[in-house]
Length: 398
Image (tube, rainbow, N blue to C red; front, side, top):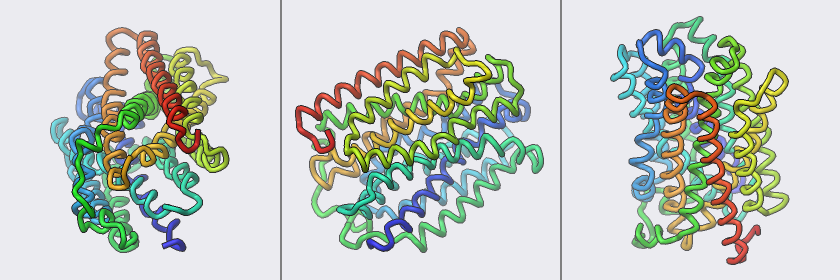
């Protein structure tokens, strides 16, 4: 398995990338969605965030499902959902049908992170490169954001309104083949092979770890601020700063473009310093600064803000994912530790765009900026608590 670990990494990375472009194909074409479906800006926010409803429902049961059917089989099923959801979305003629298609797509998003982190932690177990792999893995979200924001509008203008749905379905087909025929996991790992856990696992016992829940709510904040950046930057640049759609999408894409090297940088820092709790704390401080400065930008800082938000968001996302498996009190609880974090993460993703766009529509951009800042400040407090608890427990990497 040692010689194949990066091949296995590539499989879950490509599958995750496919899922994120499915999620983020809406922001660059919001105007076309509003025009073609005759819906409001808030409704578009629902179209973007409903993707995560299944994540909220399936996040915790997902760990038991993975233990039962195996990580590989579950990954194949998730890619099947991407294909079905996007084909249905391509033929959706109204708001309700598009929502249904997004929920089906959302099944893939519900469990892709849990499966991927499980696979990465399994194939890199006891080997060097685990921190680097986690940093590289987190590139999937900013990479997907950068690509969709830069080419999504041009593709739809050239090939038609629903062309993105067909393209993502094609990516889903490739991902399904990779998961089915390339992914191989250690036979000794029962959950990976779908042979059921080696011993009965109590979800109640797994849920008693207070540090896991503190980490989970920290992840809520990371998800909330990151997806506000991913999905509402174009709104800020276009409606608050008065840029045209093309320039708004261009500057919004810097968040994704920056995330590519910055997630890699975070992985290298984890490998070099072995201090994930400190890096997480710095990331949450950076998210407070990001939120507070949303309305303080100008031509010279549009790109810089996107780059900075991707840097600190990468710090937060990568370190939380790195820490989560380590907080499991038993190896059998790793899947549930990741699932609990994902469960709260999906609430952050789900709430981010609708709440922010609702505040913007009802109270204005300045009010939205202060709501974002308050949420980010809660994350900073939680990360400080986690850092203190890790020091008292003399956790590795503190």
